[in-house]
Image 1 (tube, rainbow over the protein chains, first blue to last red):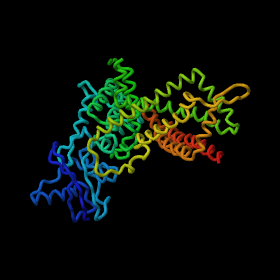
Image 2: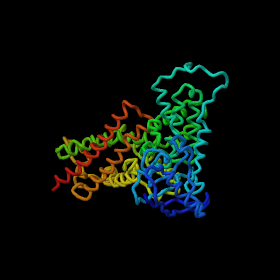
Image 3: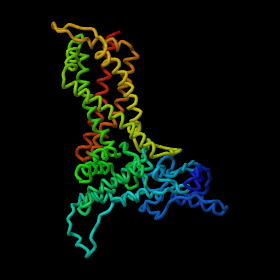
Image 4: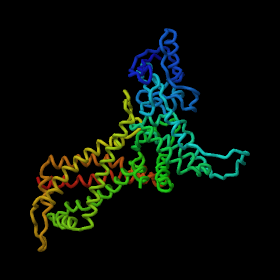
Length: 249
Length: 227
């Protein structure tokens, strides 16, 4: 396959940046999208040019590090991570536009690399459970109905890649935050900090400058882990309840 | 009460206000439609005139109508605040987007749809409400009691094909606004349930088609009758 790539190049956070066009040839349809970029970068390195910087780590679809807004959609045309997107999703001669995630809380570090530290700060604000250290508790000590365990696990599959923010017309992080709130709100271990967690994480989300939810559903439609909209409804309930119930005046 | 303002000023709180005011306005549409359909009674406007005057003098209805105006304003003001906030969240736009791949047109254009509905609302209030309340409407005698002839104002207005057409077109915009807004409001207040959400969605789509269609029927019928 021969392809034309229009890639966002930006030297650093303060650089204005712009698109540059590149040609890649001899791409196999069995390559992943990132491997295709590896081919381009090897050629550029050999020529002594600055290769295209992009985020990647596990390349197994489980870490959430890879990003890229490909032809108008986060992670490209398939509902998966970019590392699991294969070139058979494209045709020979295609022109592919590659942009970084666009959101104020996700500043571009270089080229296609964005700083998703805002997500970390939201987790730090309340996305945890405080547990006492000590002996390992018995596995069956706390009974959790299967249906609840499954729901919590589904929410917990969120890998924090930021595709929801990238897909949302409002740059909203609600799907991410709601998944993180849900996975703990559903389980007994999460009950102690449940109310405060909702308040703190949403306050942090707003402070980072993420947008509000318009319920377009774009986030769920693009989420590689298929996190459901019902999480957002749950987060709303958690937050309203927390606002009424907690003693934080 | 700082926690109240804090909650209502958060992105979630603002959306809650949008949803609650939206749901109230949905109820208002039903009541308004029920009254308006009397325009099609074919009794020369008798039922409609009695109803309109009854609404205008009933203190409870007057109170509710003031609340209605306030809630429309809240709906508009918070829509503007949210839109501004959301625009700030993405200062640099994408060069290429493919939004139809993941969301409905109506859901992405609630602001535009709402703006058209607001323009319609202003024209609508000027044309009917203002003329009845601050103008000097003709009087009509029904069974010895004098009523404002609201019916004749409506009848005259919809003789104009452009005016009637504007009403029908506005109802199309309302339909798309409701198509997304109805279900979205329930999601925002936190109601997302395997049993009820599919039903809410179906009722919402039915409502979004039926209610604007019945509203649009009135100018169409009155225009045809005027020919």
